[in-house]
Length: 248
Image 1: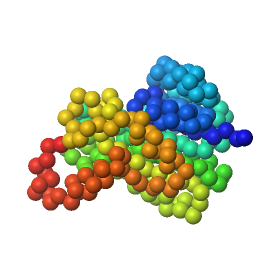
Image 2 (image 1 turned 60 degrees about the vertical axis):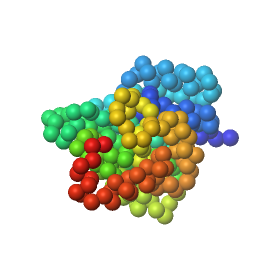
Image 3 (image 1 turned 90 degrees about the vertical axis):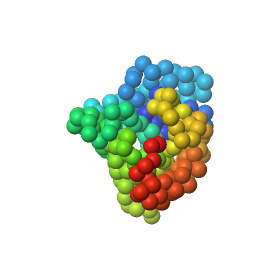
């Protein structure tokens, strides 16, 4: 029986780590990627030991340039060919991201959260198109739907990612290639700890389980946890005279 295969980019911690855990438990062989090689290798060894699946750690630096991304893709295709799903929870925030930071910092945020993700996604989608099937999962944020004075570049990058995903959904609408997007609310990760939050932070494992449950369905776009769909709708519906006074 063929073994299912998946790639998780941003797999060393948080939702990415939880996605790798869920997939390995369900019988997927994996390539897992993140910037920190030591953490990545530890995750791979742990998953292989507990779930008996092949887990290949492949470090990646999303801001390392196009040549590095292309080399990583080539190696990934060799080490785990014909993957069934690619999940990209990789991303980064910056406490100084007020839209006025230096250009290098803005470039890093745009590249990590959108440009590099789009480039990798397009290559994997090309593979899926040639194969006739496959699922791409992209991770957005409530920041894209309710932008504010903080995380300005991050929110813009996630909004661009959602627009890119919608274009790809339209392109592959009549095929078995799926592009699913999840806008995450607060999740209990290093990025949210110690911050003042409107609602409790969700367990990364529960978020990952919901995403993997939908892996072979045309989900297209969903908020996780689900109630954030209502929260975002309300925020977007507020008159500017009210919205401008919010301090969330």
